[in-house]
Image (cartoon, rainbow, N blue to C red):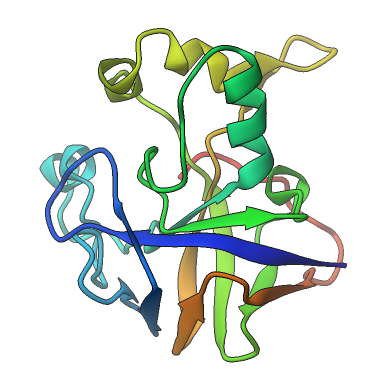
Length: 180
């Protein structure tokens, strides 16, 4: 199974959206070079207030491009980078991957999925009602978070639009994704 990168983005400051780039560089144990969330310890402001020494399990944010299609059908205007992701993909069911899945991107860079992005109320500041649109319920009533996955960088590399994504699932038993 493989997919493709449809956009790459970063932001120097803590803004909700990120700016699309021709390429981004992933740095082992840090994240996206030149991005506000790059570093060994947590950079998300709400988490820094709780404990600034926590490891950064949110170095790279990935969203499946199919979510943009779903949101457009629901009347939202969301393009790659707008929801703060670093890498937008297509053809990879990111939300179904188990924790610990390794994605090799462009044959060079590699990231390990650490968990789900837990969307917060800021998403409604971007577009009213968007938070509800990126949340759902499964058949048993459990909450489904559709706003992408978070990862750490395992191998340095440049990532560009059009790069292929290879998927390597961890050995069983698989752990389902939880918010990080």
